[in-house]
Each structure stands twice: as structure tokens, then as C-alpha cells.
Image 1 (cartoon, rainbow, N blue to C red):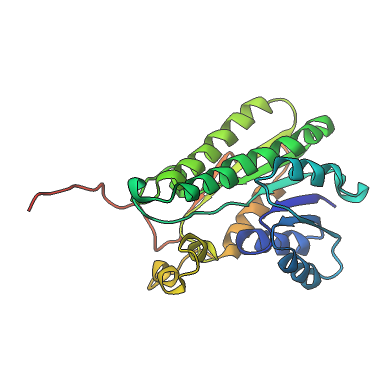
Image 2: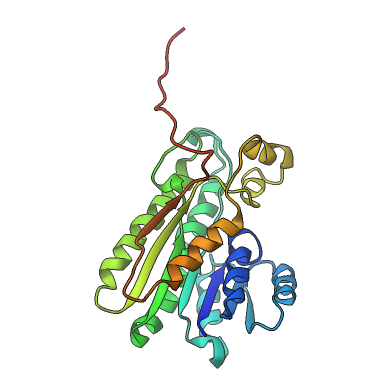
Length: 250
């Protein structure tokens, strides 16, 4: 039985990952800010061993305390799924609320780094483990309004690649999974609760589901230990790359 630590586990990709690993009989550490949602998820999962952590990954001291305080049954984390993250707004760079940029940097970069650093030493000491970072196609392909969100996800990709080199010879794996358009709470968070604007993102297209990405995470984590998926970029069939923009004077 593996021990899986999932951040941002209260909804979306995180909750779907919890369900997928639970179905395989793994024990789970589920971390998120919304404890009531975690409690409902634990009830749904039934008899699977689950430890809940109310956690804001932006708080390094809280991350350390949560991991150092794990019960013995859950302390030997085998797989870290760094899922906690968000996008805020689509305004051009000169019009954004700077606090939105700071929140994305603090969550998508610093929170991911805090959780990774707190758990990585134990994995290396045990000579087994897997860090799975949820990135985005925005980390490789720019779009208008993506500014800092895309930059944070580019960090996730490059950080994962550099982890691979640091972990060479340790037996610990590192993977970046980069989803494209996926219909979760993502757009509702990005547009701060504007449900109509969020729904318009997916109108007329079949987006990825949280379960699709959870299946990708589970597959990468369940391959033989000598196999490392470095990067997995996943789009729905209805999404592909657009042409480069050309501004034309009228």
C-alpha cells in the first residue's frame, strides 16, 4: 500500500486523484484550505485510510508542521501530487491587480516548492518516491492574459526537470503533467465566481475532466520504478494551438 500526499485535494484534479488512488487501495494524506470539503470527500471514500490536513500551502511553517506531524502510518510518503494552484484574471499585464499576481506566485510556485522540499528528504533517504507536479500547457504556450499564470507554470515545468537531475541515482522520480482546457472550478476561481463567464470558456467544446487528469497522474505513478515520465502534456481533442497574433492597422 502506497502513501499519497495530495495538495489542493478538496476539489477538481485533487479530489479526482484522491478517488483514483483510493480505488487502488492506497492510503491518502489530503491537504487543502477547505476542511469541510475534505471531510465530505473522506466520507465518500469509505474505508480507505485517510488523514486530513487543513493547509494553505503558501504558509511554509504550516507546511512543515503538517508534514512533521503526520501520524506514523502516513509519515512515509511515497507520492506527492503537487496539485494546489490557481489562475486569477485575464487582464493585460498593465491592468492586473498586483495582489492576484502575488497570490499566483505564492501558491503555484512557493507553495509547490515548500511541499516538495518538506517531503523530498524522506523520499531520498528511503530511496523511493515520486513527485508529480501539476503544470499547464500555459507553461509552454503563451496566450493573451496568461502573463504571470503562464510564467508560474513554466517554473513548474523547469523545476521538475531540474529535480530530475538533482535526483539522479536516488531512485526518486519526478514528473510534470501539463493539462490543457479542463472543466473544473478553475475558471470560476479565475473569474472570481462569475459563473456565466466561466461557463463560456467551455461552451461548445468537450473539455478534459478532472477524472481524465487523475487517470494520467495515476498512470505515471503506477509505472514500474525504472520508468519516469518526465513531462506529459494533455489537451482535449477539441483544443489545439492557434496561429500567432498579427496586429494590423485599419
